[in-house]
Image (cartoon, rainbow, N blue to C red; front, top):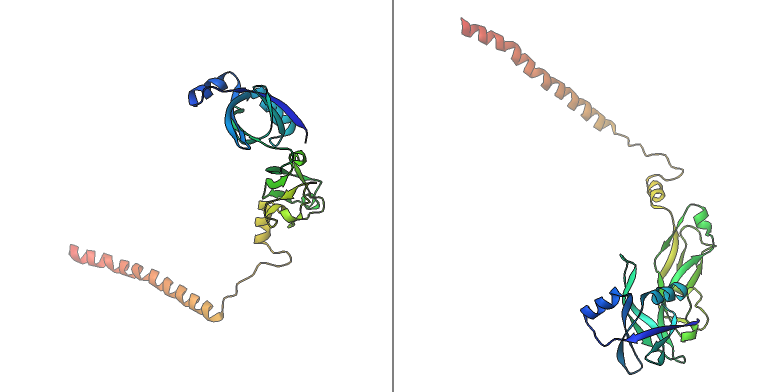
Length: 241
């Protein structure tokens, strides 16, 4: 991975107030630490930071120029205000070219999946894979070829070839991505089994007779109030007499 130079200025004041004033003029508060050095409070240009990450990603190797000295570093704990699209704080970890470092690298799918052409969709289970390598071997991304994947297929970390010079630290049994049936089609498939007709429930003859008898009793019960109603006028007539 190529290295990028980035100028930084020492911060003499720390705290929320000074940090807010730095952001107001387009600078980002940061901290440089590592290799037994005392942490340095610094600031970098917000525009330079956006350009750096856009061109090389957050795992970019940075030649950080601070007060006349250069430090090979890599960004850590990047904090961003996504509402306003600006960085608000980050750390830089000082590293050595001959010492391995641990980084998390983003996963991307490549190729046209057979399963997607059949109507499936790609489901991501893991967006980043943690690995260990020398600073010069840090990859910009990890590509997973999905060309031969069909609906129901899944790729695990252990099935992904690690980049040259790198060793994966993430559990090899961890799912990375799979090809699945879209949710609405899955529901339809659960409701209808291909090749089978809907099941018809047969009512035994004894149950049919019981239902018929119950219906007859219900009809007689409905007629009873009508008979009482016929005798009611006679009682009223007797009262008038």
